[in-house]
Figure 1 (cartoon, rainbow, N blue to C red):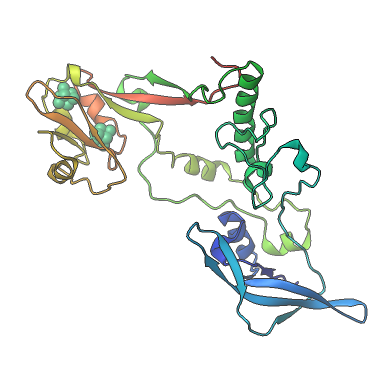
Figure 2 (figure 1 turned 60 degrees about the horizontal axis):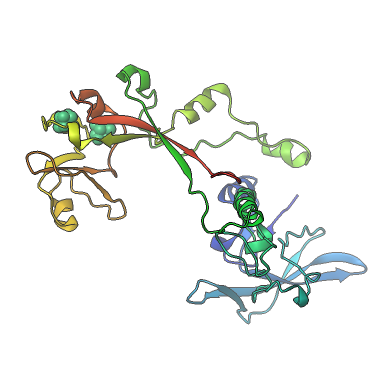
Length: 329
Ligand code: SF4
Ligand code: SF4
């Protein structure tokens, strides 16, 4: 069986998830981009192939893409079966202008991004119907956000005065062996999920292709967890500036130094903080006039600073995130 995937857009704009593309390629299916379908070619009442127009993409200042024909002769691809993956588009012909629901130039309702309220106050939109193609997780999140708005709306409250994410910091000052991670720092990428042999999977389209991890590989994958829910938290009020944490930190990311302008401070650290996207963690002033400065970008979350600190000024704290629910005060 000879299968090919043709895509209108450049490959980088494909709507498919990267792992879906990888799965297709693992089955030796070529992906041919920048080919826009022109017509089915039928000979003697039978499908003989398809004609494609070669296109190229241009992007405006807002990143909006337009495809233009390259003007080359159409490409004919012989085939006996075509599976269309046309995606989806909103169609709201049943929403008449008289309802007051305004649509934008893409045919999508004008919706407030936070409240999901349309131009008619008691009508709310979410998911693909509101903002175009997204994934199901986003649609569920929109549902939650819209439910909060609807609840506030029904109670006559301000839709923008909504509960912020409810967060809780749970302190976990524990013996090192209670929280010491089993996982070592690893540069492994996500392990590939094993699949059925390609010959078998191509013979039976109902066959479950992904086999899932076996116990050993599943364990190894779980061991890649970086425990980023556990953070180092510093309490300047109890620090006696013994510098024990500075000595023990394996990556030299803790510093006690004079405060200063950020650029100057970044260059003065034991390990210069080069990642400008990662803010520095700077404490309030300590009794000697210095501040504690930590470069979060290189911290391994190893917890040795918390273990060493004689006054529990460093603690490993677990961060638990709870999202708000409709009706929450
Ligand atoms: S958790 Fe480890 S790497 Fe991070 S600051 Fe503490 S000792 Fe250094
Ligand atoms: S080990 Fe604790 S008390 Fe000593 S400098 Fe570090 S945070 Fe301060």
